[in-house]
Image (cartoon, rainbow, N blue to C red; front, side, top):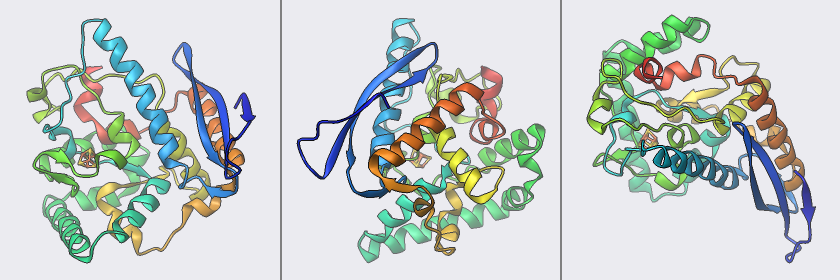
Length: 277
Ligand code: SF4
């Protein structure tokens, strides 16, 4: 964070900062809560930042004659295992709890059906056998098996994301420039995935890894309802004033940018995407 202060509202602090994106940097500003907050509560700001990164990359791709081909109504990639940071999981659970009872029941049934279908396809056992988190080959195979099970994300409705404004960071980061039809099976077709120079999801996963001493630091989206039963409140572990929490986030982003860490998380979202890059 390069500067913070000059608030026009005592409840907020305006911060300007830059984050490393590839060879350059993205200049941005945000209104941070002046009082106590959590990393989970800062998610809207982080999502906006991710959108700015993705927008910049999309613009560069278009200028290079390779426009992004992802469109509303195409949910082909929404049949993959989606990694969700613990903080996003917390926010999604809170959001779901705010919905009318009927909608909550509908979503719970969708998650249940997805888990049953994945169980029948033998994928749940593979996810629970955590050796895939250590071995690239297993991670890629799991990604392929998950995709081939053809189980849509519980939030996918009419091939569109029903939670588009609050969808996970990893969903925002998945972009292709090849014809959408090829995404029907990215493990077979040469899907041209776009490699983002920086993925903010990785910074969020890193917080989760530190918190839980877990190799992944995220949960598969389809396990959201099961994770909810733990009653976990990860945001409480990264809390303080808005400036403090956001500064920690920016430090983690810088660390991720330096390490270029993608680990096996990459394989879980995009089996074929890997071979296409
Ligand atoms: S959350 Fe939305 S974008 Fe992400 S996989 Fe599910 S339906 Fe697709």
